[in-house]
Amino acid sequence: MERRKGELNWFIPDGFIPPNSTGNLISHEAICVLNCNEEEVFLEITIYFEDRPPLKSIPFEVKGKRTKHIKTSSLQKDGEKIPIDVPYAIEIESDLPIIVQYSRLDTTQRELALMSTMAYSIK
Amino acid sequence: MERRKGELNWFIPDGFIPPNSTGNLISHEAICVLNCNEEEVFLEITIYFEDRPPLKSIPFEVKGKRTKHIKTSSLQKDGEKIPIDVPYAIEIESDLPIIVQYSRLDTTQRELALMSTMAYSIK
Amino acid sequence: MERRKGELNWFIPDGFIPPNSTGNLISHEAICVLNCNEEEVFLEITIYFEDRPPLKSIPFEVKGKRTKHIKTSSLQKDGEKIPIDVPYAIEIESDLPIIVQYSRLDTTQRELALMSTMAYSIK
Amino acid sequence: MERRKGELNWFIPDGFIPPNSTGNLISHEAICVLNCNEEEVFLEITIYFEDRPPLKSIPFEVKGKRTKHIKTSSLQKDGEKIPIDVPYAIEIESDLPIIVQYSRLDTTQRELALMSTMAYSIK
Image (cartoon, rainbow over all chains, first blue to last red; front, side, top):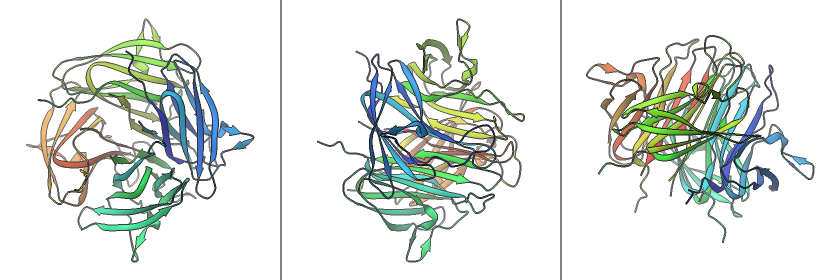
């Protein structure tokens, strides 16, 4: 039997889209999803804020045996996007097991800063 | 039944508030808390030092279905704050499950450095 | 009895080989493997892409009681290497327990950025 | 009953002491240990290399209810230290539960880069 590769529910408390960039690299965050299943996975991404109700269940799909590095600035639901320059948090729910890593590239001040961590999963 | 989203007890061994900044970004650390519960959570934050007894049980609250990116320099109890330029460690206790990530932004030397990691939780 | 030191299956969703470098340090990624066993371990490394089937089972060996910091740009199978400047993901399978950490050094824009995280393991 | 705060055995596959520094900040790594026990803990730190047998059981102590951010360049056993500019890995064994985070500050190329991750623990 195949091992179950990943979990269904992932969390990233430190979300932040830097408002500025310098040089040729644009500041951004990526939710990096690995789908080791044969089947496509269907994600629902919920965004939590400090001072207002969550933006719920943004849909996203990742094909089987593929990875997708999702830029958070590209996510939207009914035209609503994640605001820049605002602290927020991310929850990802998937219909099949996945693995999630979060990275941020910040070029606000010359020249380049990186951070990365595995997201937190619950079983 | 809802899955239990997070844990009650989290640890961050590498705490440090950089004493200096350059540019427009101020060096700081953030304890990023995600509260997926409907109810507000009550936190107690304990600070461990290298050479003196802990500063115990600094209180903090995070509303239900919200995140809070807590700047460590803002924490205080009876007027006592975390000193800058000193190695320390952080323990967070919560009355309901939460998820915790720790990040540091350092602009001590031009221009910008970032680091981040999920905090360590015990079940 | 010895404790089992590590796991057999590890994942790194955020792989990326930066195309450019500045200064004397060359941009690169490292898959850092620690083998605490007495015996040599045999790894199979699979690379997942966003838009094409995986590059499967690149072989690699790490001797007993040794570490190896594997530069991803050095991996190849039948002459095929991991392309630069492309988002990808990594799976590592081992015949004995190992521990895996992933780090990236990026000097694309002056001068230096680092990120690191433990890889994600399944039991 | 008190919860058990941490584990007895921790691993950091990506160790590296940068040989150079710029500015006022010296490049270094830190093994950040948090000891939540009342009692002092006794550590044994083993260093694994790519091309020679491990440097075994460097002793270190951390007092009860204290943290210690151990600079790897300060570790030594019988006069032997961890060489700079060499890939290595770290294992930490403790006689009581602890929590371990690893961070590196690199100022090799102007000006500053940081990385950090929780160490990997086994139960």
